[in-house]
Length: 275
Image 1 (cartoon, rainbow, N blue to C red):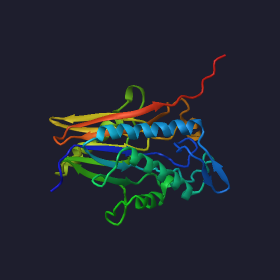
Image 2 (tube, rainbow, N blue to C red):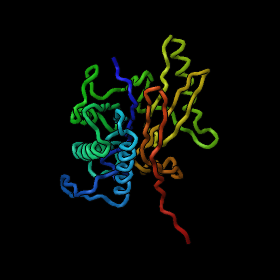
Image 3 (cartoon, helix red, strand yellow):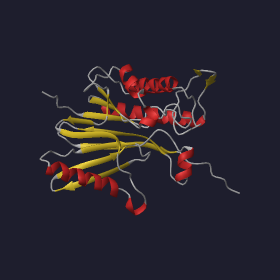
Image 4 (cartoon, rainbow, N blue to C red):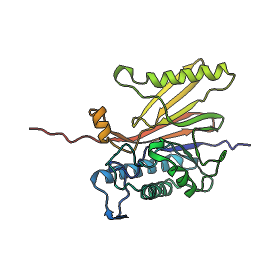
C-alpha cells in the first residue's frame, strides 16, 4: 500500500555542467591539460544552486523528499560549441556529480527519500545521464535508470515529468501554449477513459512558468521548471533581449492532495553601458 504523507519535490534540470555559463562548485578543478577555478558568474550560479537546495531543506522538514533530475545534467559537446570549461564528458559528469552530492547533503536526503532521473536532450546528455543515475544508485525501470517520462502518483495525485514541453510564450500570449497543451491532454485522456494528470512538470525552455487548466472541479497544474544555465552565444543570436532567469522550483503535494509550488530564481542581467 503506497504511503500517504506530505511530499516535497526538488526538481533539477538544465544544469548543463561543463558549460562556462553554468554553476561550478568553488574549488580548483584539475582537468586534462588545465586547472580551472570558478569565475564570478559561475560562483553566483553555484550560490543560487545551493540557496535553492537550502530552500528545499526548509520545505521538506518532516516530509518525504522526491528529487527529480529532469534532463540536461551535462552540456555535452554539441553544435561546434566552444563555450565549455571542458569538452570531456567524464569531466562534465564529475562537475554534475559534485553539484548533486552537495545539493543532496544540503537537502538532508535520506534513506526514505527517492530520486528519479528523466532523459534530457540527446545532443547534450547522451548516455551520460544513465551513468550518473547509476552513480547515485537509481534502480532500473524497464531496463533503464533514466526514464523518457516519469509517470508518478503521490498521495493519489498523478504527476508527469518530462523534459521537452510547451513554451511559456511572450507578451500577451504568455501561458497560452502551456494551457493549450494541458487542455489537449485533459480531453485526450478523458476520451480514452483515463484519468488526466493533475501535475505536469517540464523543462528545456530556460524559462519558468506556472499555468493552471480547470474543467469543472478538476485542476491541472502546468509548471515549466527554470534552468541553471544563463544565455549562451546561441541564445544571443536568436533572442539577445531575452531575460536570463535561473533557479529551481519546489513543489509540495500534501497528504490531502493539495498542490503548491515556489520558484527560487534570480535574474542575471547583461552588462549595461551608460555614457
